[in-house]
Length: 149
Image (cartoon, rainbow, N blue to C red; front, side):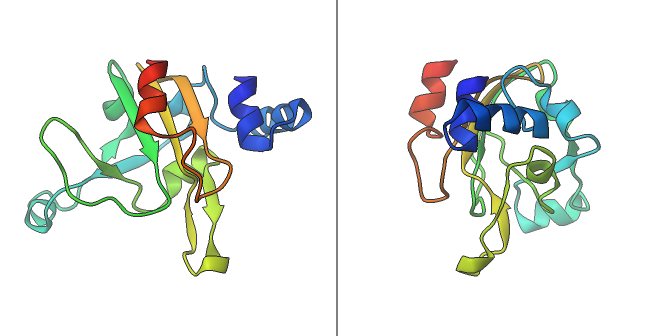
């Protein structure tokens, strides 16, 4: 936990303790409890969205009783593939609840998600990686998280 928090908070042990005190999502925490009342919208075609009234899925339905790899990206998702479910944080409430929101207004991008990855087993975060900068791609990639499963 401390190493993930240290990476997130700038690398020092004191920064990691400060991050833990602020309630950042971390290894061992329950991702559903960390974002109470949050639902995500499944990626789908426009027609499918209209047919389902753009319904959302509660986090407990996504994470409890399942092994899930989740990626947070500062940009939008596109498309959906068979056997892989994509969900969007339509209003940013999920990332904000996990304290993974970053303000990129200086780059004319507004509020976005940090770039991150996590392995979640039955709602519990087992591995958690957050990049230091939105342009970094060192710790949040698929090859890193797959090695942590």
